[in-house]
Image (cartoon, rainbow, N blue to C red; front, side, top):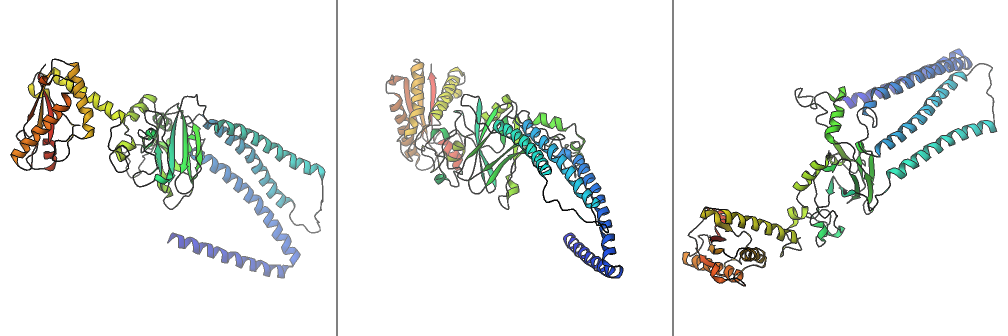
Length: 497
């Protein structure tokens, strides 16, 4: 409805202008062409002066009133190390072009008034003037020279790449319709290789899982960075042209499919510090949600943001992502909580090239976990607390054949037995209640014997006892699949030490 009213208003305005022009034409005929031309010229020249004053006044006042929402003014000072140099460049450019803007508009409208039509006055034609041409060529050339040199200095400073010997971190941002995928290196500090031909629903970046550098890479939801740490961002796109834009950090770089770009910057203020800075401004001391006057204020809800500065499609708006800047200790704690994308989404799937083997860090983690459990069992007084469930010992379905991945847990037992020569163990096999009780008893004994035969190699066999309990000692209900899985287990128990 509002749009219709606006359209009708414009149509009505056009009709009015047409009618006024017709009236003027009739008036010219009545009063004479020359007198009408003189009157019209005087009016237009005065209107131009009035428009000039109102226009320049409105420009200056609006810039002053809204300066706090313009980057570099009000509360939104640059939050990166290179940001102030760009803000200075912007201010110098604004000052020079602003002066030119005011002078040229004053001259434009004033000349329209000064040289308006007068009876008997004839314009003078000046075909050439060397002095004037030198002046109006030299002054803009000097101004442009100053701006270009200033800009070149800022460009060389801002766009410089990192030195390999520098202390910096490298992350990756990939744009697609319509989101950003962020990738951080894991403990190795290196990002793994990618191949666009490997992109699918499980592998959105086309990471090559045979490259072990990929196995600890993480893909966080938010862009989280430590303050005062140089960051090199690899920037690319998966489909169309996007733009990696961090307005508060004065960072803007195109994300081009097939043509990786980069940007280097250093955050200089944490999110919390920036919020406290905003809290000093009245426009941020209002409720963040106008419908909840008692809710948090606008400065409390502020977040830096990552956006796309290209109109990349109908869902362009959804590419906004939070940016969180933390102190180094807080960042380190956050990073420790992140799980690698490989372990969370790929491990054990058909995409996993290591599905039938353990990775070294998994072996190390299992070693540490077993050592802690064995030490706890040694120190325990209660006999029930001296039992250790072998969570990583597996058998082929319905048989006593150990799977290849069981060797790591069994090797841990052998190492513990060698380190504690006085320890005597009982190996116990257990099943659920599925099938024949006698068959379950036999299967449990066979599985206990299989573990015994592996561990006893190189050890005194009298220190190990293998017992099959069948389905007689369940630790959970056999009425559910989850309970039956828990009951199918192999345990060791320290019976003497």
